[in-house]
Image (cartoon, rainbow, N blue to C red; front, side):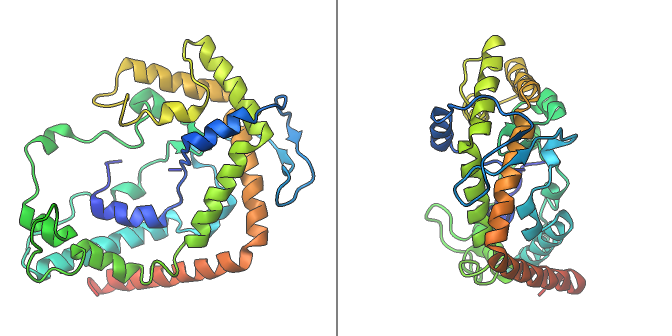
Length: 317
């Protein structure tokens, strides 16, 4: 999966629309690990391909594993389209805010998320440079100095997101605030269309890859490598899940050491490349079996992008 932390309104969009590259599921990961009985996989492994069989794969080195393309990516927004959607979200939100009395409102983190380089994949942290700089943080650390003395006006918050903590709604604000209105315009009937099938297939492929014997064998090797360095962990997800619990506040030397060791062990055991190859194979199988539905979702996304482009051209909607 995979810059400054996005605002709440950005999260509304990204949660529903972007591919979820970081498939962290502790319970599933543990179950996958317990099923690990196979020997480490060689370059070409796997039984005959089928809905429930382990597909054959060829493991090859990836020069940029954090940005490795996957088959289901073709059915989501690409970076340019996502930027258009975020720009339109900002324009619609700002237009609404000004309409109900906030003439100077401006989104402070416009387009921040589209230029950030992904640092993780479904197997956890894989980017060595990011590990050296930011540890396990999924994005750049917030500027605590700028946040410390700044608090959003409650009236503006109510107008932007709707009533908060029992506070009254702002007069004239739409349901869910201006952020909610913008989202509904960009993603109409989101419960009926959008990327529901895509999201399900991304999750399904990730679940199957976690339980694949070649991945679980690689995780066993990775865990042994980590133990040699002094880290008693069974799966990569254990370390990744510490963001927000153990890995809080300024990045420490302990976190940097854990992160760089994690990435190094993934490289030494070829776990990252094995994961990408296996996940690609499962996604390819799902694309073949669900292509008609995926094509329909892709068509709807195209319609949404065209609407967003019109918003950018007109300056509002």
